[in-house]
Image 1 (tube, rainbow over the protein chains, first blue to last red):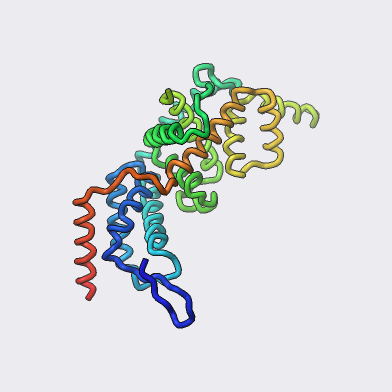
Image 2: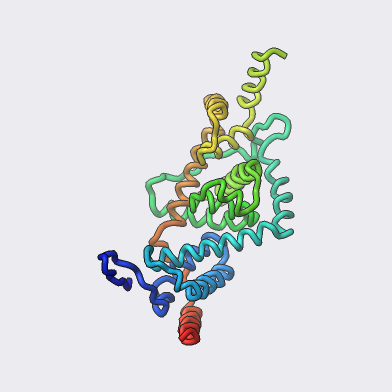
Length: 198
Length: 99
């Protein structure tokens, strides 16, 4: 990483955009793919991030690494995309259809698990790295089946450990909606895993 | 209805309601649970093996998600070489425009 020594001895990072693609493109792409669940929008996001980075170069203060700085730009772009997706008509429609599906997990009278949806043991030993990888791969494909808004909430909370208030503000959700989404997402992911795991 | 009866009814509700219990499990995982809710959940879990299993699996999912997606050694997927070349060219071009 290119650095520059200042008079007071603090080492500041300088930007070197000609190396960005080689050094960070794959990393940023993976970061985006996981969060937007598809390669096409992820590719666009990487490109937008580099272009936004070029425009904002004079505002870079050198206090973080290049990678951290670029990742921060990408993160904002991803949230913009979430916002767009979650305000779209489609995702509102998706919510109601998956909502109905979810009602099926429990008996509507007493709130008990319906027998066919009750969790069963997965055979997984938590120490086995290979199993973990396979498990992760299935989870990833299960996430693709979620409504966009649910996946966004889930990623922001579970992967990025964003504060709940931040998520509510960014995605314009009420706190009760937020918890309902968190709950339903997990019920759906778990059921999908059970169906696809061995 | 007396207060005692009300409380008993409330407790009875949670003791038999797996939908509510799994909701509280998720809240607890993310530190959003109140003390009262925590008590309700404890009561439910004491008598419900299915929800205890759900709780275990839910935590496993959280752990695997973090490990899987944040693993820095994740090698796939990669961007195509042509895309990278084009991207590199675009950056060079923009830099020249600036100067």
